[in-house]
Length: 191
Length: 191
Ligand SMILES: C[S@@+](CC[C@H](N)C(=O)[O-])C[C@H]1O[C@@H](n2cnc3c(N)ncnc32)[C@H](O)[C@@H]1O
Ligand SMILES: C[S@@+](CC[C@H](N)C(=O)[O-])C[C@H]1O[C@@H](n2cnc3c(N)ncnc32)[C@H](O)[C@@H]1O
Image (cartoon, rainbow over all chains, first blue to last red):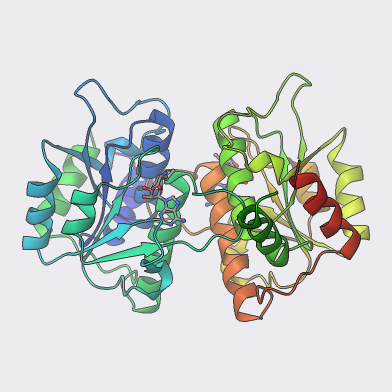
């Protein structure tokens, strides 16, 4: 491994946020998936979770421009078990929801361990997913459209989390991953 | 026109930001264009400017989910003349640029009249566009990817502008459009 590549990977590892994740409920357009994985990588999120409408849906390798090698996309059979597992890890579950009862997305404290639930392109988040969440949030809109693109909405929330975590010193370059995992990734990345 | 529709359009007009715009330099993927126009609408931007790689590039009506009826997409032959016209309107020109010399996008004062220049998917912003800008900005990234998707990057900057303008009372529901234009849009929207 070249010294430049080693430095780049080490740097990436030092900014990873193991307690921040995104959960995609049946998001199925390849370009949306790719954009979300790329944004996750950019803010230091290394795990993205998903359920699929059907088994044939797949992330397109080309459009994610390599980030999928550094972000783990976990596929789940059911949302319920997966969300319970995240909650067992101490995560708060925040659902994005185009509803009058949802609070402004900037009012949430994202410095806490957090999983963000994103809904399907056409149907949005399911009632089941909403029922599993601690809080639902909305990104304010003042135009004529009903909703934002799902990769855009994901990015706005992830970068709000990044902003809050930066202020809280959570991007100070001190590795927050378990040592073993950091070593594994470093080792695998060199090959 | 139904009273609900009248209320919805009037409300939209009261939040429009005539002194905030986006300039797309040869962005060509239909899903990116559609997502950008949709986000523009959502933050109250009613004018989006663009130059094209070739004349056949067109925004796809379907994917913009109706927002293109409420957002004017202005096509320009050359970037230079169009940027000069925006500057003549008193706009600061902010270019997004993946460079070490660019400042953090959150450091800019977006309450000033502002045009945001976005670059092409593959090649990014041109040296000519950079030369025309007052300032270049970057969205911080700590992962392995080189860049964000262009519609994601546009949204992050537009919503930072929205955040600042909201704090400055620029979304207080008092119509900021010239009266004639507001009337014209209201009239056309009823048909
Ligand atoms: C295109 S939207 C789904 C629209 C669907 N008709 C609905 O009512 O939910 C796809 C997903 O993007 C996210 N999203 C889009 N706009 C949003 C907003 N303004 N606030 C919060 N989430 C949003 C949500 O996760 C949503 O489920
Ligand atoms: C996919 S990027 C272009 C990548 C190109 N290789 C380059 O070096 O510019 C497309 C556009 O998205 C915007 N963009 C993407 N990531 C950005 C970031 N981190 N900061 C600012 N703008 C960004 C810029 O407008 C850029 O020109």
